[in-house]
Length: 267
Image (tube, rainbow, N blue to C red; front, side, top):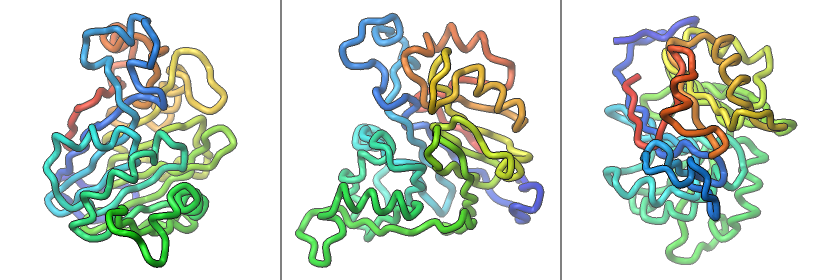
């Protein structure tokens, strides 16, 4: 049994499984029309769907983000009730798979946890899901508002929202027990750093080797990981410009690794 630290949680808990469903940026890898060494690689670790993870324990089945590749990502997973989606922000590569939640409606409404601006964006893009009188077959989804970064609970799992910045866009990362997931990060405000203390596992986005206005480069991601100082960090949301998985993995510090699609962690 592990115990959470620093007052975020004070109860013992069973291990949970984190499964990386996608570790690529908005274009995925291979990128359409690209013949670079990464996009033509035969190494499965260089094939990256759009970024999303599944978090499960004996009671709860959660996802962070619902990418346009959601259908492909879940076909090989057990078909079971989804207890919630934690949405980081409204960009299409993080919410484009929501219409594919239709089959899960047989278990009842699927809860989407999001900030108000994100909820409003989803209503504008998918108004047919929020009509007073819905037609048959639309996904049965329920928006659950995250207000003022207040922690909340989904079944057996406590969730701590974390404010991060995606250039000028405020978005959310999430801490669950001693695990945190921060994607599309450019920087983390100083006042949020305390929420990231004493982590066992940190998942952090790193787009490419060179700088980008709204995403961290590899160098910036390594620096942020070392500042947060978790036991281990896995990098996600990579583009083909990051380079080949096997070659680039050798350049990382010992406690930082590139995640890959299908990777499972016990946390």
